[in-house]
Length: 91
Image (tube, rainbow, N blue to C red; front, side, top):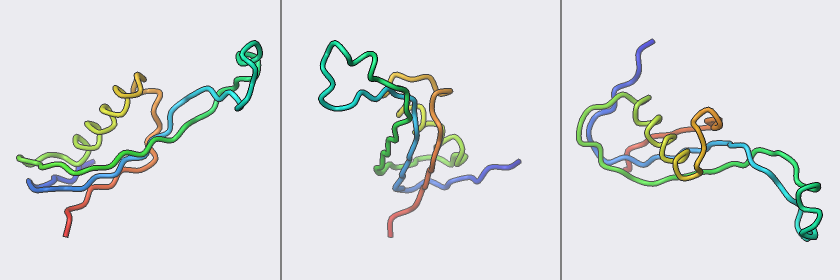
């Protein structure tokens, strides 16, 4: 399987991931928070721009941004489900 090579330039990126979390219903009294909590998956979307100075594989760029999100959320990469990743050059 070959990966697409991305040429140097300015790019916009969008990344959406799902990760495990625990939900506690609003207005739950403190004494009951642990019992009322249940596991769920939360979604996180990030976007921005960056300058690419050298040719890189698309997969490497995608993995870089996924790692940034996992580091921010203090999760292991195995806990993350990649929902979408787009990479475009602005007009």
